[in-house]
Length: 267
Image 1 (spheres, rainbow, N blue to C red):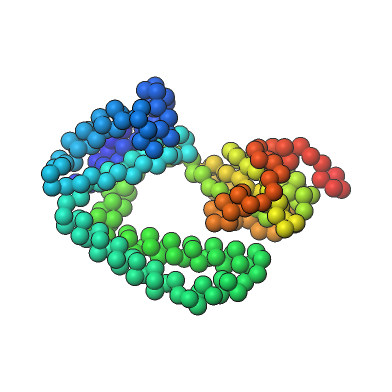
Image 2 (cartoon, rainbow, N blue to C red):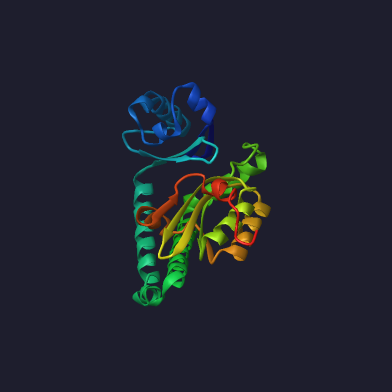
Protein backbone atom coordinates (compact mmCIF):
# COMPACT_ATOMS: atom_id res chain seq x y z
CA UNK A 1 0.00 0.00 0.00
CA UNK A 2 1.27 3.45 -0.93
CA UNK A 3 0.13 6.48 1.07
CA UNK A 4 0.78 9.95 -0.36
CA UNK A 5 0.06 13.11 1.62
CA UNK A 6 -1.33 15.49 -1.00
CA UNK A 7 -2.04 18.40 1.34
CA UNK A 8 -2.45 19.13 5.04
CA UNK A 9 -6.00 17.79 4.84
CA UNK A 10 -5.87 15.23 2.02
CA UNK A 11 -4.23 11.81 1.69
CA UNK A 12 -4.25 9.39 -1.25
CA UNK A 13 -3.91 5.64 -0.64
CA UNK A 14 -3.27 3.12 -3.42
CA UNK A 15 -3.63 -0.62 -2.79
CA UNK A 16 -2.53 -2.94 -5.60
CA UNK A 17 -4.72 -5.86 -6.65
CA UNK A 18 -1.97 -8.31 -5.65
CA UNK A 19 -1.78 -6.80 -2.17
CA UNK A 20 -5.52 -7.22 -1.72
CA UNK A 21 -5.30 -10.83 -2.89
CA UNK A 22 -2.51 -11.57 -0.40
CA UNK A 23 -4.66 -10.41 2.53
CA UNK A 24 -7.75 -12.24 1.28
CA UNK A 25 -9.72 -9.25 0.02
CA UNK A 26 -11.25 -8.26 -3.30
CA UNK A 27 -11.63 -4.70 -4.63
CA UNK A 28 -15.41 -5.06 -4.33
CA UNK A 29 -15.18 -6.12 -0.68
CA UNK A 30 -13.13 -3.04 0.12
CA UNK A 31 -15.33 -0.76 -1.95
CA UNK A 32 -18.56 -1.87 -0.24
CA UNK A 33 -17.08 -2.18 3.25
CA UNK A 34 -17.89 -5.87 3.64
CA UNK A 35 -17.39 -7.40 7.08
CA UNK A 36 -14.16 -9.19 6.16
CA UNK A 37 -12.61 -5.86 5.14
CA UNK A 38 -13.29 -4.14 8.49
CA UNK A 39 -9.90 -4.99 10.11
CA UNK A 40 -8.04 -3.59 7.11
CA UNK A 41 -10.20 -0.45 6.98
CA UNK A 42 -9.67 0.09 10.72
CA UNK A 43 -5.91 -0.12 10.26
CA UNK A 44 -6.11 2.22 7.26
CA UNK A 45 -8.13 4.75 9.25
CA UNK A 46 -5.47 4.75 11.96
CA UNK A 47 -2.61 5.28 9.52
CA UNK A 48 -4.44 8.01 7.61
CA UNK A 49 -5.44 9.70 10.87
CA UNK A 50 -1.79 9.83 11.94
CA UNK A 51 -0.74 11.30 8.60
CA UNK A 52 -3.35 14.08 8.87
CA UNK A 53 -3.14 14.66 12.64
CA UNK A 54 -6.85 13.90 12.76
CA UNK A 55 -8.85 15.17 15.77
CA UNK A 56 -11.98 12.95 16.01
CA UNK A 57 -13.61 15.25 18.58
CA UNK A 58 -13.67 18.31 16.34
CA UNK A 59 -13.12 17.01 12.81
CA UNK A 60 -14.70 14.49 10.45
CA UNK A 61 -12.94 12.18 8.01
CA UNK A 62 -14.46 11.66 4.55
CA UNK A 63 -13.26 8.85 2.29
CA UNK A 64 -13.94 8.03 -1.36
CA UNK A 65 -13.01 4.61 -2.73
CA UNK A 66 -12.56 3.81 -6.41
CA UNK A 67 -11.69 0.60 -8.27
CA UNK A 68 -9.13 1.27 -11.00
CA UNK A 69 -8.98 -0.53 -14.35
CA UNK A 70 -6.02 -2.66 -13.22
CA UNK A 71 -7.92 -3.99 -10.19
CA UNK A 72 -6.22 -1.76 -7.64
CA UNK A 73 -8.16 0.43 -5.23
CA UNK A 74 -7.50 4.13 -4.80
CA UNK A 75 -8.79 5.90 -1.71
CA UNK A 76 -8.88 9.63 -1.02
CA UNK A 77 -9.22 10.68 2.62
CA UNK A 78 -10.07 14.29 3.49
CA UNK A 79 -10.40 15.69 7.00
CA UNK A 80 -12.82 18.55 7.57
CA UNK A 81 -13.27 21.00 10.42
CA UNK A 82 -16.28 23.30 10.91
CA UNK A 83 -14.89 25.90 8.50
CA UNK A 84 -14.43 23.23 5.82
CA UNK A 85 -17.96 21.95 6.37
CA UNK A 86 -19.37 25.47 6.02
CA UNK A 87 -17.34 26.28 2.90
CA UNK A 88 -18.34 22.94 1.32
CA UNK A 89 -22.00 23.64 2.04
CA UNK A 90 -21.69 27.13 0.52
CA UNK A 91 -19.98 25.67 -2.54
CA UNK A 92 -22.67 23.01 -2.95
CA UNK A 93 -25.36 25.68 -2.78
CA UNK A 94 -23.52 27.60 -5.48
CA UNK A 95 -23.26 24.50 -7.66
CA UNK A 96 -26.95 23.71 -7.13
CA UNK A 97 -27.87 27.23 -8.23
CA UNK A 98 -25.55 26.87 -11.22
CA UNK A 99 -27.32 23.66 -12.25
CA UNK A 100 -30.72 25.36 -11.96
CA UNK A 101 -29.50 28.26 -14.10
CA UNK A 102 -27.99 25.90 -16.69
CA UNK A 103 -30.80 23.35 -16.88
CA UNK A 104 -33.47 25.67 -18.24
CA UNK A 105 -36.81 24.37 -19.45
CA UNK A 106 -35.97 25.64 -22.94
CA UNK A 107 -32.96 23.30 -23.09
CA UNK A 108 -35.01 20.37 -21.80
CA UNK A 109 -37.79 21.09 -24.31
CA UNK A 110 -35.20 21.20 -27.10
CA UNK A 111 -34.04 17.68 -26.18
CA UNK A 112 -37.63 16.42 -25.96
CA UNK A 113 -38.38 17.84 -29.41
CA UNK A 114 -35.67 15.75 -31.09
CA UNK A 115 -36.34 12.32 -32.60
CA UNK A 116 -34.41 9.03 -32.65
CA UNK A 117 -30.63 9.23 -32.43
CA UNK A 118 -30.74 13.04 -32.44
CA UNK A 119 -32.62 12.92 -29.10
CA UNK A 120 -29.86 10.75 -27.60
CA UNK A 121 -27.13 13.05 -28.93
CA UNK A 122 -28.92 16.14 -27.63
CA UNK A 123 -29.32 14.58 -24.18
CA UNK A 124 -25.67 13.50 -24.13
CA UNK A 125 -24.61 17.04 -25.01
CA UNK A 126 -26.82 18.54 -22.30
CA UNK A 127 -25.54 16.15 -19.61
CA UNK A 128 -21.91 16.57 -20.69
CA UNK A 129 -22.25 20.35 -20.57
CA UNK A 130 -23.73 20.20 -17.08
CA UNK A 131 -20.99 17.85 -15.83
CA UNK A 132 -18.28 20.10 -17.27
CA UNK A 133 -19.86 23.14 -15.66
CA UNK A 134 -20.08 21.48 -12.23
CA UNK A 135 -16.49 20.24 -12.42
CA UNK A 136 -15.24 23.66 -13.47
CA UNK A 137 -17.17 25.41 -10.71
CA UNK A 138 -15.88 23.03 -8.05
CA UNK A 139 -12.24 23.29 -9.05
CA UNK A 140 -12.25 27.02 -9.75
CA UNK A 141 -14.14 28.06 -6.63
CA UNK A 142 -12.58 25.61 -4.19
CA UNK A 143 -9.29 26.64 -2.59
CA UNK A 144 -8.80 23.02 -1.55
CA UNK A 145 -9.49 21.97 -5.14
CA UNK A 146 -6.76 24.30 -6.42
CA UNK A 147 -4.34 22.93 -3.83
CA UNK A 148 -5.28 19.40 -4.86
CA UNK A 149 -4.61 20.11 -8.55
CA UNK A 150 -1.27 21.73 -7.73
CA UNK A 151 -0.25 18.86 -5.44
CA UNK A 152 -1.20 16.24 -8.03
CA UNK A 153 0.86 18.06 -10.66
CA UNK A 154 3.85 18.06 -8.31
CA UNK A 155 3.38 14.34 -7.61
CA UNK A 156 3.42 13.62 -11.34
CA UNK A 157 6.62 15.64 -11.74
CA UNK A 158 8.25 13.62 -8.96
CA UNK A 159 7.20 10.35 -10.63
CA UNK A 160 5.73 8.90 -7.46
CA UNK A 161 3.52 6.76 -9.70
CA UNK A 162 5.78 5.07 -12.24
CA UNK A 163 3.05 4.02 -14.68
CA UNK A 164 -0.48 5.38 -15.07
CA UNK A 165 -3.39 2.97 -14.83
CA UNK A 166 -4.97 2.03 -18.13
CA UNK A 167 -8.01 4.12 -18.94
CA UNK A 168 -11.34 2.32 -19.23
CA UNK A 169 -14.17 3.79 -21.29
CA UNK A 170 -17.59 2.47 -22.24
CA UNK A 171 -18.53 2.75 -25.92
CA UNK A 172 -21.89 2.09 -27.55
CA UNK A 173 -22.23 1.60 -31.29
CA UNK A 174 -25.60 1.84 -33.07
CA UNK A 175 -25.89 -0.20 -36.29
CA UNK A 176 -28.57 -0.46 -38.97
CA UNK A 177 -27.98 -4.17 -39.61
CA UNK A 178 -26.04 -7.21 -38.42
CA UNK A 179 -23.69 -7.08 -41.40
CA UNK A 180 -22.35 -3.69 -40.25
CA UNK A 181 -21.87 -5.02 -36.72
CA UNK A 182 -19.84 -7.97 -38.04
CA UNK A 183 -17.61 -5.74 -40.18
CA UNK A 184 -17.02 -3.39 -37.24
CA UNK A 185 -16.26 -6.32 -34.91
CA UNK A 186 -13.60 -7.71 -37.25
CA UNK A 187 -11.67 -4.46 -36.79
CA UNK A 188 -12.44 -4.05 -33.07
CA UNK A 189 -11.36 -7.63 -32.28
CA UNK A 190 -7.72 -6.52 -32.67
CA UNK A 191 -8.19 -3.85 -30.00
CA UNK A 192 -8.08 -4.17 -26.17
CA UNK A 193 -11.84 -4.63 -25.75
CA UNK A 194 -12.27 -6.26 -22.33
CA UNK A 195 -16.03 -6.82 -22.44
CA UNK A 196 -18.81 -6.51 -25.01
CA UNK A 197 -22.48 -7.34 -25.55
CA UNK A 198 -24.90 -7.12 -28.47
CA UNK A 199 -28.53 -5.99 -28.10
CA UNK A 200 -31.41 -5.28 -30.49
CA UNK A 201 -34.22 -2.74 -30.17
CA UNK A 202 -36.54 -1.19 -32.78
CA UNK A 203 -34.76 -3.02 -35.62
CA UNK A 204 -31.40 -1.49 -34.65
CA UNK A 205 -28.38 -3.28 -33.18
CA UNK A 206 -26.54 -1.88 -30.17
CA UNK A 207 -22.99 -3.05 -29.47
CA UNK A 208 -21.84 -2.23 -25.92
CA UNK A 209 -18.11 -2.50 -25.27
CA UNK A 210 -15.46 -1.58 -22.72
CA UNK A 211 -12.15 -0.31 -24.12
CA UNK A 212 -9.13 -0.42 -21.81
CA UNK A 213 -6.16 1.50 -23.17
CA UNK A 214 -4.00 4.59 -22.68
CA UNK A 215 -3.23 4.79 -26.41
CA UNK A 216 -4.81 7.63 -28.36
CA UNK A 217 -4.03 5.73 -31.57
CA UNK A 218 -6.26 2.83 -30.48
CA UNK A 219 -9.10 5.21 -29.61
CA UNK A 220 -8.70 6.87 -33.02
CA UNK A 221 -8.88 3.53 -34.84
CA UNK A 222 -12.01 2.53 -32.92
CA UNK A 223 -13.74 5.81 -33.74
CA UNK A 224 -12.61 5.54 -37.36
CA UNK A 225 -14.24 2.10 -37.59
CA UNK A 226 -17.35 3.56 -35.97
CA UNK A 227 -17.58 6.30 -38.60
CA UNK A 228 -17.25 3.70 -41.36
CA UNK A 229 -19.73 1.08 -40.13
CA UNK A 230 -21.88 2.49 -37.30
CA UNK A 231 -24.73 4.95 -37.47
CA UNK A 232 -23.43 6.41 -34.20
CA UNK A 233 -20.67 5.69 -31.68
CA UNK A 234 -20.96 7.30 -28.25
CA UNK A 235 -18.86 7.26 -25.06
CA UNK A 236 -20.37 6.59 -21.63
CA UNK A 237 -23.88 6.90 -23.04
CA UNK A 238 -26.69 7.36 -20.48
CA UNK A 239 -28.81 5.17 -22.79
CA UNK A 240 -26.70 2.06 -22.22
CA UNK A 241 -28.18 0.91 -18.91
CA UNK A 242 -31.75 1.38 -20.18
CA UNK A 243 -31.04 -0.65 -23.33
CA UNK A 244 -29.36 -3.44 -21.38
CA UNK A 245 -32.46 -3.71 -19.20
CA UNK A 246 -35.10 -3.42 -21.94
CA UNK A 247 -33.63 -4.46 -25.31
CA UNK A 248 -33.38 -8.00 -26.68
CA UNK A 249 -30.03 -9.52 -25.70
CA UNK A 250 -28.43 -11.22 -28.73
CA UNK A 251 -24.97 -11.95 -27.29
CA UNK A 252 -24.46 -11.23 -23.60
CA UNK A 253 -20.71 -11.81 -23.33
CA UNK A 254 -17.63 -11.49 -25.59
CA UNK A 255 -19.85 -10.32 -28.45
CA UNK A 256 -17.02 -8.83 -30.52
CA UNK A 257 -15.01 -12.05 -30.33
CA UNK A 258 -17.98 -14.11 -31.53
CA UNK A 259 -19.06 -11.64 -34.22
CA UNK A 260 -15.56 -11.31 -35.66
CA UNK A 261 -15.65 -15.03 -36.51
CA UNK A 262 -18.79 -14.66 -38.65
CA UNK A 263 -18.79 -13.90 -42.37
CA UNK A 264 -20.22 -10.58 -43.49
CA UNK A 265 -22.36 -10.37 -46.61
CA UNK A 266 -20.34 -10.04 -49.79
CA UNK A 267 -17.28 -11.61 -48.20
